Length: 112
Image (cartoon, rainbow, N blue to C red):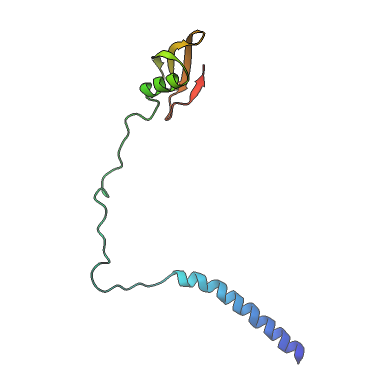
């Protein structure tokens, strides 16, 4: 008799834990009923407009010149702009120098 009650207690414990695990999912699905004003919010003003387009997605030549100045290149000027890189010429400590930047946002330096 004691064994049967023990097995029944274990079965009840397992059933209760199984039901408590599924109750969380069932509680997530609720029905909300609102009466009165103040619940409906209109969409934001630009809701139906397409997102803004950016004309320059690559490295801006002026930004490449600024980065070259910060690396110590004097009298920097943009020599060539290709789809992959921006080439800047100028004068470093030892004379004429060339820097290459990737033609992506932020102008990371490729080489000197």
